[in-house]
Image (tube, one colour):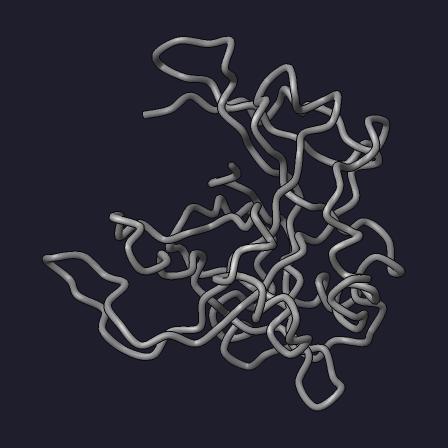
Length: 221
């Protein structure tokens, strides 16, 4: 399960990454502007997401984590999608309009070989380039705040797919890793392909495609 990732790109850099096929969403441009510092993103944080609207790829701000399925017994946001056969996720994956891509520069997993405090290891592309998570999004009416500061309104929410870990992630975290889209063809298939074509991307990244970045080591609080 991935519950922490980072993004070190400005809105303009994300647009360039999209090969000029994305527009700049006004709400994110106002919030982020030309900043280029690394954003550490946790569940329920707001982050940039790329969606398709009227044939254009648009960057919007959304909140990380779907509402939990009925009867789950937890109110925590659901940040990862592993069981894509579930009736809870199937409609969003089947509907191309609800697929999205989530820009990132690295993701973290807790190292199962460490004890308290747990150390998080960061994984990035071997070539240092940014990438996208394969995500889905939806609108939802409800409270995503705290008891002291409720935030009741209509939210745009996103989550992203995970898969079995590859040979780099497995020794650290043997449960899952995010689905990484690292080529324009992957992005095109996820956003525009059939549900079957899109789900073919639910596979681990090649072992030589990612590395552990020791400069980003983080201990749990």
